[in-house]
Image: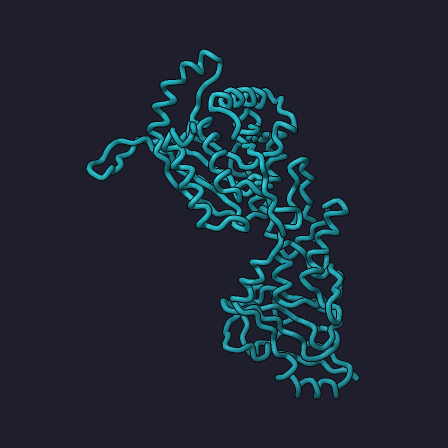
Length: 438
């Protein structure tokens, strides 16, 4: 004999109108008592609501995005044994206590997240193709913390086999699932719980005349990596201004000599030299996370990438051993790689091994921007157009040439205080030619 019974949202504490962030079952699924039905999330806690009884799910009364409170109808279950219904209904207050995760616990869980693999400097692997997977029909047993962990990594917990007690999925199971996918070719990183709505298909010809042009090869390749880096790396940008009045005066005095040798003495050459000194002072900026995201690899060399704008798109050739080269040597090498970049003759070796990159838009304009980190590097410097500004010297305002700097950094590796110290130190080098040339 079977009976259909409706179950409502149980006592979830001092929470009201809590959002359903995930529905873990579907109509037609067979569910066991204590299996999770849905996950709720308020400003203070994550709540997983289990089912009070075993049976077949006849109807779901909630959906993702709903706001629910205690007593809100959530599910209708067909139960084969009426005695089980009565027993479980009696014990419902004790057996349906939700699992809560405090804000501090969530912060701790987030701080321990290890991100998916980063490409090595020697050879960049293909970007994993994000392939949504259909739910297998089985229920995924995992705590709210593990579900949140998996969601942020783009993994569907329903395709993971749990190794915990009673088959429960652990954080290690999620990590091992990602490692297995990467080792098998990196083509099956699952993102069904991390997907965003697709772009709308718009027929632009309805609104007027259009012209379609294919993206360049560089745009197609770099676009995937830029998207990956922006999504996978927690970017923060620190801004500052460097007084380059003396630097510019020195550059003007020596640019004629450089011209005679066949190259331009640009401000970027000085920035590359200053950056090498700053990396030595702050070695964390000259590091990369390992493939597991568990260790920092500190580099003992100082190779700096410079973004070059070409007709086919942006490329980033690398100037090697910048700590061992004079400004004139750097400027000459920049000329050589820029010519190769614009002629489309850069080799893979020309663009590998960078420690940090510099993207200079000073020749075009702007006051600040947020450059995207070039993984596996952990920071990138953006440079905008310098401007004459009145600066107080303690007695009066005097005109000084100020250079805007924008430092984007990977917040998993670098905290805000270190970023502020780094950019202040870099500004001080650019402001004092003695520091740069010594």
